[in-house]
Each structure stands twice: as structure tokens, then as C-alpha cells.
Length: 431
Ligand code: AMO
Image (cartoon, rainbow, N blue to C red; front, side):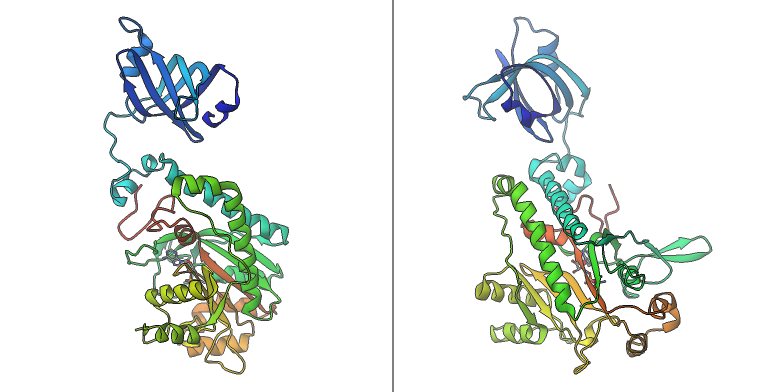
């Protein structure tokens, strides 16, 4: 790998990568070669009357993948890492067409059309190294805490969240739905006595919006745990696992993130601030913003405002907004015994945007059936879900969190299009 060269002594080496620039001068030819680990200057003094190698270098098109043998030389004057390789042999594995369809300043749509070229940009590829480290850290935390990893089906007989935003697919003689969330099956794992589970997998929403934070297919990070006293236990677990993820990213990529993205990773402190929704609405109102939603939920501007308040007041990037009204929460959220108008639930807002929803779930079948009726839902349609509650189930709760949203906010990217490997939206199914 190119990144390994500087540790080697001068002498023969073999490297491979794609051509980033060519400076085809009269006396000497320079090529910048890049692989996934870094970039390297290749040099070749031009022989009188040219030869096969100098002709091949002159003919190189940007982006072509080439393999090179040559002599490594340390030289402080070389800006790119203080090393260069003098070319002895060069083979083009696969030539690029001469015109590259995208540049760093192309529109995001153009870049996504040619995502594989866009991802050759080291800053764009770094997002997915960070994602790998982050997911690995979460998974490690859960595995070390005895969680079971589950893989739930994405083809469903009934909607997993609501009838809205639902993709239907022909399924032999019937219709299937694409899973909007593993909600049902992570709860099933509690009825199965698994105790603590997690899943990192795709979720689908037929959401027609074109915002920076909505996709029709996204990676959802989900966890569910038994024997909780309230949503507080879920929040405590979620903040611990997030800290593990942030610590791992800061340790492994902190320097590269500074260099390529100009950002410092802030590992959050625990506990994250918690503010009941009614109080959050009051705080932003006192600070001049009346949330315009009739249903009493925070709108995106309200989320930004409460985050700004938390940042000023507590110096924290995260806030758990808790105790949502029953009217704006799904039927499965557990309601307070002394005030059934409120649920034991929360949204996690990070730097002004909701990244997660969590709650204690209603595990008592009789109460659950009342809440199903209260929401005007048809219990017959939910029979296979309700079945999980007929033979005993412990008190439980969990959360779902959008991976791309979190990365967008962490890395200060303008859209989840930048932090999703291949974005899917209402008018994007390719590549
Ligand atoms: P919710 O619907 O709030 O909750 O989704 C949880 C989190 O998933 C992410 N998300 C999305 N990301 C990108 N594009 C979308 N269209 C999109 N929709 C949702 C967000 C959001 O906060 N079952 C519950 C979770 C639970 O209670 O365990 C649920 O799905 O980051």
C-alpha cells in the first residue's frame, strides 16, 4: 500500500492504484498515483526520443488503474509525503475514458450519478471508514454486554410502523410490505426471552420528501432490552453505546478528520441532557419561537432551537426530548400510569436534528388492545404482532436510530446523500 512506503528503505517497490494527475514535461514525467491508503508521486526522466514507458505515461488518462514497479527514494523536497518512486515498469490494468464526468465541485446529483468516481475523493471515502469504525464500536459494545444480534425480515405481511410511507411489493398471490422498522420483531425477541438485542439493517419508507435528512431506504440502528423500569434505562444504554462509537471514531480517525474535513470529533459526556417535550416547547417559545404544529410536536426549526438552547446552557450537542404526548406517539408506546396523556418515550436530537426515537413499550396485552382501539387501528390486522403478547413478555423498550443522519451531523455534511453509500430517494434508484 502507498501508505506503507515511507517506512521502507530506498529500493525496489511495487505499487498499484489510479492516476490522479499527470505532468508530462519535456525532461521528466510526473504522475500522482492514488490507492485507498494515500497518494504517491511517480517520476520518470524522459529518455531521448522517448521509449515504451514514456509513451505509455504520456497516453495515461486520469482515473486509469495502473500497476507500477520502480525504485523508492526518500526526498524531503517532494511535497507529497517526502517520497517518490522512479518508474521501471508500468502496466495499465484498466484505462479510463479521457473525460471524467464529475469533478469535486459538481452538483450532488451529478456526483451521485457517478458515485464510484465521487468516492475516489479521499474525504468522501473517509465517511465510510468512519462508518465502519462506528458500527464496529457499537456492535462490540453490545456484544461485550451480552446482546444478541438479530436479522429481521424486510418482507412483511403487515405494516411495521404505520400505513403511511409504506412500500408494497407484489408477492406471489398476495402483497408484501417492505419493513419500515424492525419494531415488531425486536419486540418479538423480548417475548422470545432474548433479553437484549440489536440490529443494524435497512429500513424502507415511501416518503416523497426531498429534504437533507430523508431517504426512501436507510440503515437503521436498533436495540431493544427487557426488564427496564422506564425509558430512562433505554436512554442510559443509548448514550453509553454512542459514547463508545464516538470514542472509537475519535481515536482511529480524529487526525484524518481534522486534516480532510477540518473538524474535531467531540466525544459527548454522559448523561446527555433530558428535557420533557412540553418544557422544550416552552423554552423555545420563551426564546421567541412558537412551534407552529397543531399536534404539539417539535418541528425541524423547534429541534434546532432546543439544540441551540442546550448547547448554550449545557455545552452539549445531544438532548433527549422526553415524555411525548400519547396523541403523537404510536400505539405501542407505554403511557404513564398517573397521566396516560403522556408516553414514556423520547426523541434524541443531535446538533438540531432528530436522529432517534425510543420508548418503553406497552407489554400488557389488555392495555395494548385499548391503545390499539384508541388509535382507531384494527386488531385483526395486527394479530401476528399481538400474538407476541399472549404468552407472557417482560417489560421492555428500545430505540431506532438513523445511521446516515448521525454521520451527516457528526461530519457536518449538508445531506444524508453524502453519508449514504448509495442514496435512495423518490427520484433516485440508480446506480
Ligand atoms: P422513527 O420512525 O422515528 O422510529 O425512526 C427512527 C429513526 O430512523 C431514522 N429515519 C430516517 N432516516 C432517513 N430517512 C428516513 N426517511 C427516515 N425515517 C426515519 C431517523 C429516526 O430518528 N420503531 C421506531 C423506533 C423505536 O421506537 O425503536 C421508529 O422507527 O434517524
